[in-house]
Length: 488
Image 1 (cartoon, rainbow, N blue to C red):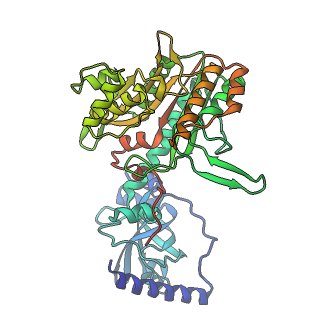
Image 2 (cartoon, one colour):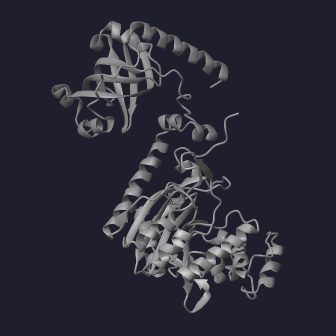
Image 3 (tube, helix red, strand yellow):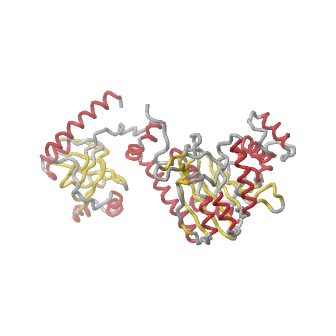
């Protein structure tokens, strides 16, 4: 729609609103809807024209007017509610000439209430024959042109309220999201997990290698951070005896924005005492399969097999599959390979960090089918338990699907002295300029000193999972209000 035409329509609608105010009829709140469009279609969809004429079932609906066809003494319109759409029939005979004439001047996008009886038109469409119509909300701004909807991608993200109003497929994405989150919640609850809530503002950000957002609390005169992960608080609960806990949480990381990253996102994290990373891998696979609800998922033209057991692949083996031969624990060799790929790295980074960087540069993009990657170096796993047979590695995994990291889990580090040493290593990295390195959390060390049972934990990226399940190319497609630059 041209900007000049939109401005003209906006002013015309404001004039209509002024007339409504003058008549004392603007924005009433005494109409009570009794029926949804989907309920009417389900209840009467199988009935014949003759059956409906005999029964004359009553209906009271309300919603946004999406289509309107004025044909003299009769008007057909389509009303959309949360469940779907319903056609209505307004005429001089049914509502009276005065009310019908007023209805003709209502606009697409207006929210209306309709009372009448259900019938079937000569063309066979289920319709409400309006006995009364009311204008409940005057829409001052026009909706996008009806045959094309809202197609500007940035405007769809920025004005999600319009996107939801005119693109039914978008509503289905978020309805699916809500159902799947509930499935995950029920699966964990059935396994004896307790859903909890942990602080979103924290004096020390922890639980992930990430740059936090900072704020200031005036009354306490102290710096606070938006959480980057709930992990350290959830494990405090395990120390306290809540042996199986989970949280579906909002995290905030001061990082770049891409098709896979939004500074505010949703994670599922869960922890279980007296289990290990192998248990967590199995449970992660079960949760993802339950969320998918099908053995195969079609994503961006690729068919992903969620029905067969997920592959398991050691991180060094994933690198070797790309033709790299050599000692993958020799820093000089790894540095040489990274230089060939023009991947920047620092002298302070050990072989573990460089091995992970080489994996990310070479191998990650090839992990299309669901694959658990294992054998992560301890250097890049500051909260994971070292492997008994090889202390330079950790009992950790990451789940990749379509080259996206979907989940991360491990046997938990419950040795307070080892954890304190790793926090100190993180502090050294932060002092050297690594803004994503962790802080030293003395209270968490104190909690571990009281004794945390052997445990395992995992985190699942809810937004990335929903990208896969709804065939969405960008994380912004599955977040109702993604972060955007200011307009203009």
